[in-house]
Amino acid sequence: METYTFHVQGMHCKSCIALTEGELMDLPEVTHAESSLKTHTVDVVGEFGGRTQDEIVAYLTEPLKRHGYSLHLEKQAHKVKWADFTYAIPVAAVFIALFIVLQKLGIVNLAGSGEMTYATAFVIGLVASVSTCMAVVGGLVLSMSASYAKEGQGVRPQILFHVGRLVSFFVLGGVIGALGSAFQLGGTGTFVLSFIVAVILLILGLNLLDVFPWTKKLLPTLPASFSKHVTRFKGVNSTLTPLLIGAATFILPCGFTQSMQLYSLTTGSFLQGALTMTVFALGTLPILALLSFSSLSIKKLQTGVFYKTAGLVVIFFGLFNLMNSLVAVGLIPPLFSF
Image 1 (cartoon, rainbow, N blue to C red):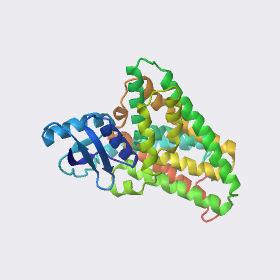
Image 2 (tube, rainbow, N blue to C red):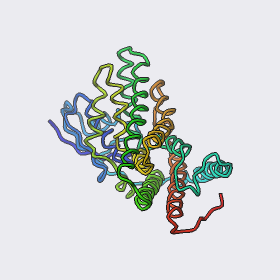
Image 3 (cartoon, helix red, strand yellow):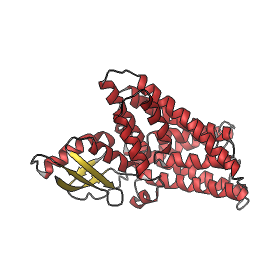
Image 4 (tube, one colour):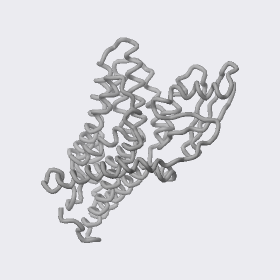
């Protein structure tokens, strides 16, 4: 057995830990893999048949390429692609302007209410579906789809996966909403949770900009053991497995999902919580469906320009929610007439 430590380029959040470890552990030569977001490294233990370190790096990088990761013997300097903002800022400005127009027409009623509407949850779902925090779900979908395709099972497992995901988001979102009612959240409790949601969105947005590397350490997640257990289900073959994997994505460490879960808690209603999480899941559905039913790679959608555009839009949502929560409790006056 040989033990190596490689530097990982492309890690963005704690979901990347589960994804990189899962892909490497699938290789027959690897007996153990442990990634670290703090140091952006991965420790790999295995038998590599006398390969050189360069050959091992190339071999281990191959299954990680489609997720946007690469391994290196030396630490890679972080480089900010400022040129991406040349396109990202105007595209984000157009999107935000369109959102404000819809707000003005009353189609997306976010400002002034202190609440996040279903339309907003859907838009955040769209952004989340191609964000780095959804990479683990995308990797899970790609791996599962490839596995079942090899067995000639057609589209049935993929359909079951998405059905299981939507059902779990409805039921568990409703449970979270009902828990909010049981705790009898008052004005202060609602404000605190709304404030936390806004801060999480700001952290997610800054992380997507890829300008401040330290923001990766601030991303909230559930224990990594949850996602590790879920990703290991992908090799199990049974009728219920796609349903269970889809349902289990509710607890995967995605900051966008967790911010929606926190908001669902503030609703204090089973139906509102269920609908909020379901609409969010529907927002993620188009991209995940493409990953399921085609050979589309998630990395093809994740260009630097898109990341920065999405980051600016998410920061906008975060600031808007932050201001709305402050307005709702009377700490500041309304700043906008729309």
